[in-house]
Amino acid sequence: MSSTRQFLSRKLAPHLSGLPSSTTTASRPVALNRPSKRGFASIKNNVDTLIVGGGPIGLSTAYHLATHYRDNDGSGITIVERDPTYARSSATLSAGGIRQQFSLKENIEMSLYGRDFLRQAHDVLKVDDDEVDVQFQEHGYLFLASSKQGKEQLIQNSKVQQSAGCDIHLMDPSQLKQKFPWLNTSDILLGSFGEKGEGWFDPWALIRGLKRKCQSMGVKFVKGSPVGSVRGKSNGRVLSVDVLEEEKDVVRYNVHHVVNATGAHCSKVMETLASTENGTGMIYPIPVEPRKRSIFFIHCNAQQSSDFVVPRIAPLTVCPVTGVYFRSEGLIQADGEPTGNFLCGVSPPQEIDKAIDDISELDYADHELWDEVIWPALYHRVPAFGEVKVKRSGSYLRKK
Image (cartoon, rainbow, N blue to C red; front, side, top):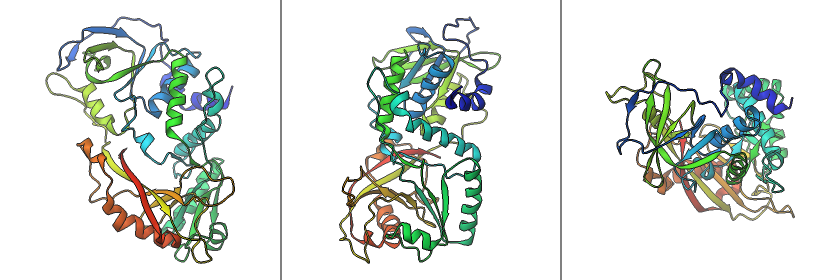
């Protein structure tokens, strides 16, 4: 049995043991709980698994169901995605990072599986002779601690990470300075660096590769959004989902399983599926809200000198206290010269980090964060960043 099957069997099989085949057509009682506001569905389809959300999570769910539980047959799986251009996709607009530096073993194990998947993407996502290059750059993550409490946390996390087989190394200030001569370590007590397996990749390439592979196995893709559901009277189980599709028709999908893979929007989607005519819904709402995150792409104009060293390759570095992060951006030049290109960002302070309802807020980045938090932290941590310019910026949603 492959390592992939072993991981999935160990982690997912207990939850999927009752999964019926894609050809199952058992009849079930139907009780209409909430018809679509646009009227009753005019078309009906029978599918085994309906996945709402066609980003990396939804696509990965379809891929793994088809490859590991259906003998590469995805004909019983349908993915509903409201925007197949992914113009507002959190995945394509974010930093596209992967790390194993977590404190929870289960998170570490999932990330190790993701690391192996990215390393093998060119092969496992290949369709015919067309391979996929997700441009996985294993340049690492670097977490820094400037307090005794932060130092102790890195040490405890490292024990869990190393027990799981991660290539994570603790580094004192002198070791950090030797490896990263551009780094200001004057207030640093300890660093934790992922030598291998951590870094970043091209999310858009991963999405395209997963989608093409799923299509080759028969997974169906629909442009639309769920607008209602039908649930069983006795147990409340979702029996069908009404989807408003591109042609403005409401199509009903009779389902055995529904997967909510809508990320920051998952709570609202769940409310749609759980709501009833009399106004009742979820007993325990999903505690997830969409939060705005801004990302800035910068260029460092500083000339190399003993005092101002421009990083040739900067791992995704997380500054202590502020939480500001930065990393190199783009493919590294073959001659080893620094490109001077980086991306950076930070989560807003808790007092202003509120859920957003107006998607138009993503049309602009929060430049106050750049002026007041990000740039001062960058300049303190990397003196050469005293001469940087913002080339472009953007915003995306993150669930919290």
